[in-house]
Length: 388
Image (tube, rainbow, N blue to C red; front, side):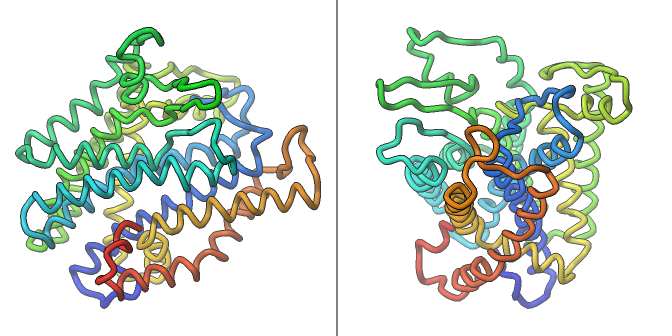
């Protein structure tokens, strides 16, 4: 990945836009995690309950829906770009396997502890870092397929996995654990003192990362910016059109929408989509928006705001771990100073405070993230840095 201080050129502009888009969804993620930390007394369901969710909270949560799909898509794309700098698919496959395994271990250890502060843990939540890690391990095998086959498989998984929604296996079945990991979100009971929550079933994410890898040749050094931007525009609009058409007919793989007394609530119902696991409509909407944003960011070139976003996107794992621990420590400090002001929780009184808190955290974390991104760019001889 490029750093924000990279010399402007066609190559850095091409890669700069990827870091900038990753940086934008990282900030959306920060907003959502501030909500999950300081607005937990107003937790939302999946999909959300329209009658019980005010528009500002609905919009904030829906905005965060962009994070995981865009990040997983860019992970696949970045894997292809990594392969451009190395010899053969063997190097890429080995890197994906090791990086994926590293992320899985990270989810079980540092990430889970950041959420719970429990040692030993009684509950382990298998969330987005787990899903990315398992998807990378799967991609380490899938990259040996021809590109057309890889793209076809990714599309079939994304479009077809909702056909499996009605398939469930009881705890007595040998398929219970693998199916809960792949598609059926639930609890895995390993002992009286340890439970695992498969928050992010991985099958749809394997499809998304495969599509991201398949998009790689659009970003090859020999491709023209105009051609690439035209393809991104066509792919993004096609995905959004597919979302609108399927949603209008209350079709496949999603809870139906309906009319409400107010236009705002009706619009909310239309965009009220399922994330766990992500439905076809969820992925069509978010990936369509992501592809159009990627095109817009490349066209924006080296604008200062693009460079600022690219700072966050150049060190994503460092930012992820840093912000989780900062949020947890801030929450504990607030409880110690102010006590529990919303039942069992300390929390903000409005969603506006959530946005202000996220903005303040983004500003305060900018310098340490920039410092780490520059270290990554400067010390390419330190192998472990590339995992962050």
